[in-house]
Image 1 (cartoon, helix red, strand yellow):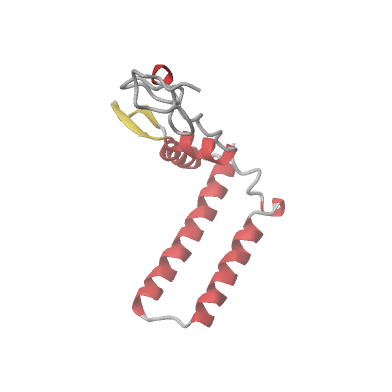
Image 2: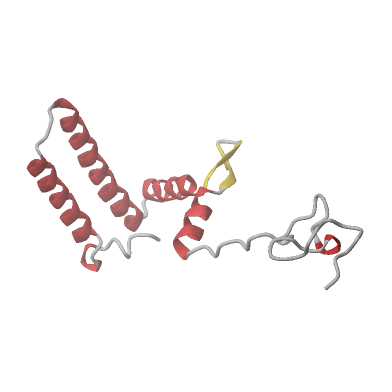
Amino acid sequence: MTKRKSENYSVGYGKPPKARRFKPGQSGNPRGRPKKCLSLIELFARELRRKRTIVEDGQRLRIQTDEVLVKRVVDLAVKGNEKALRMTMKLTEQIREIESEKIENDRDPVSIEEARARFARLRATILADSTPATGIEDSFP
């Protein structure tokens, strides 16, 4: 095998020929890494975070989709829609319980056993509320 006289460079592992090297500014992966496929939950969460334009009291507001949904349900409840009213009252009750627990937790430290018991009670109420017998499934118009 004859050596190239014009180069003091041997071709081998990790040493490509000069003609096949990447040019300056050229990437070895021009298309880049493919974007990851989002799950249904991630797609739903992204859509809820998306901002939308609404008109409220003659003013244009740009707010997140989840806030628009809350405003819509509360408006329906105020107008007399029974399903929306039941759902709003149930959520209001749960929010007040959570806020009162936060206030109680701020006052005095709680033992681990008490915290576990509170968590178990909260979990039981959430699971009981999510069953079809409570009407939450049918509560959104």
